[in-house]
Length: 107
Length: 158
Image 1 (cartoon, rainbow over the protein chains, first blue to last red):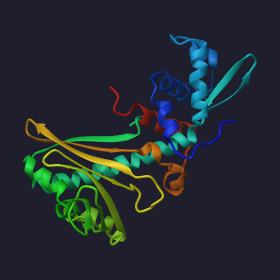
Image 2: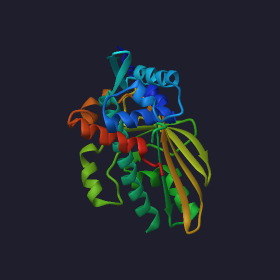
Image 3: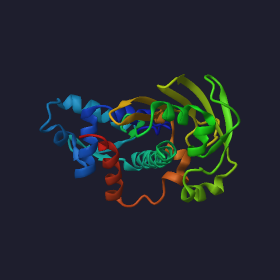
Image 4: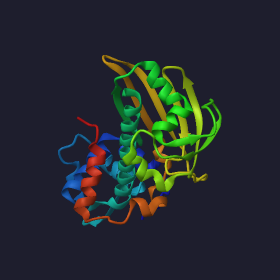
C-alpha cells in the first residue's frame, strides 16, 4: 500500500504529465481498468505505462490489485476531490475580489 | 489549475495609474479587498491588519461582517511600480505553521484599459485534509467526485 503524503506536491507532480493525466481521466470516466487496457491505443510501452501507474500509486491517486497476470487499477478519488474543492473555493473567492476591484477602479 | 496555481486575467477599463494605486497602496487595497492595514506596503516587510467589510459592495460587506476584526497578515515580496505587486500569505487565515502561497498582480496594456493578471501559486505545499471540515464531507457518490475531478483537471484547456 502506498504511504499517504501529507502535502499535495506529489499529486501535482503526478498530474503534470500528459500521459498520467490521460490515465487519471480514463479511470475516472471508465472505472477500473487493467494495465493492458490502459496501454492499448497509446504509443507508450507497457513498461512505460507501468512506471506511470506506480508513480500515480505513490502519489495516492490510484490503487491496484492483481488480476491474473495483469493488474487492475482504480482511482483513489477522495484526496483529489478534496484538492479540487479547495481550489474551486479559492478560485471563487478571487472572482468575488475581482468584482470588488472592478467596482473600485471603474466607477 | 493542474499546475497547482490559480490564474485570473481581467481587463479593467481604467488608467494604468488608477489600477496600480488600487493595488499597491494599502489603504486603497483595503477598501475593495476588505481589510484594514496597519501601514503601507513595503518590500520585505510583514504587514498586519484586520478584516474589515468591503466598502464597495454592501451585500458582500454584510457577509464579511462576522469576520470583522479577524487578524490578517501579508509579507510583501515585490513592488515594481505600474507593473507588478506580489505578497505571500496564508490563504485560509493566520495559521503560522501552514505554508504560504504567493499572490502576484501583473499589469500590462490592453486595447481598452489595463490587463490585470492575478496569480496565486504554492498550493502544492498545502494539505486540504488539514481543512477537512471545509473541503471534505458531502463527498457525494463516485460520479459526483469524478465530475469534480474532471472539471478541475480540464479547466482552462481548450
